[in-house]
Length: 227
Image (cartoon, rainbow, N blue to C red; front, side):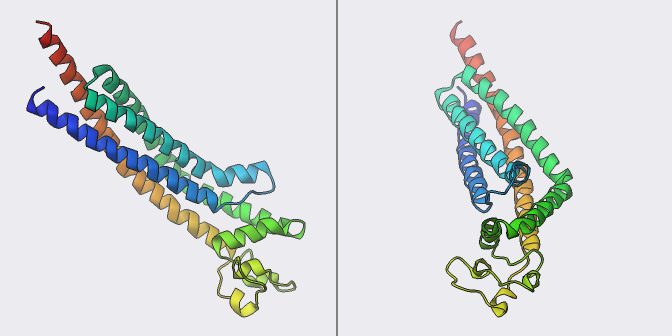
């Protein structure tokens, strides 16, 4: 293999090491998002809240597996393995680009769905306060809009943290409403998903091109060795 082929080989290997790291980060990031969301009373609310984090975790697993395949193909100089990797990488690039576009276009709708979820949790607190407590603990918030939503009620200790034995109005007034806290959480994370996804997609496209070049170089070397 000439110098250009060796260069492509090791650049592709380094790219795939980065992909392995990106895959692990996506898995960890999606898991953290899932850990901030409790179980809701109803399949529809639960699905709406968990859909994006689950997609991120699955995407992270796919990136990790394909990157590992690319590392093996590059180091062993196997054209079949490398071409298989390049096909998977191109499909992954298209899927990730579609996901980014979906998140970009449906952002407002998704945030509106989150507001509906918070409203339903608030309405259900009379029969099941545990879900509202979980929401307030997870997002460090109090009430649906503000602590004043508990005007004629005792402010639950979940408004003041997991170790609180009680919660006064003075402490509760420092916390944002859960609708605002939930919305800010998703806005922040959707932006991270969008821009991180664009960066990863660009690297995936470069890796696809390099994999095709390496596979072609390996095939040419095999043909030359047969003469």
